[in-house]
Length: 85
Image (cartoon, rainbow, N blue to C red):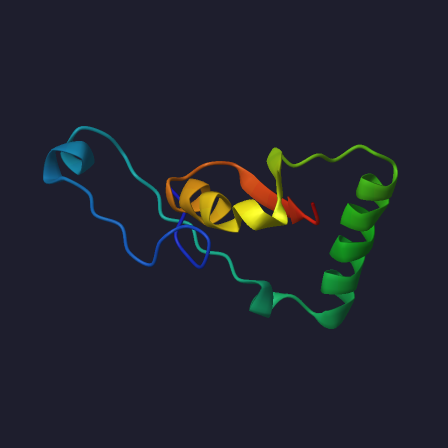
């Protein structure tokens, strides 16, 4: 489960789920990185992207189908990319 801006701000767990297994909660924030660490990570990711080694599942729609794109996003669909018709 992901929490945060692109996940959700809260999470609920049933007591049965917690009683029946071990659970770990891990936290992460970019705020804990130094400027050098951020620059290094961004440089690495951009290098992979430039080499064509990264991809993001997405759907391309014409700009006039923006409301459909918002609905698809709200329903948990893939990323939506709007382009001029």
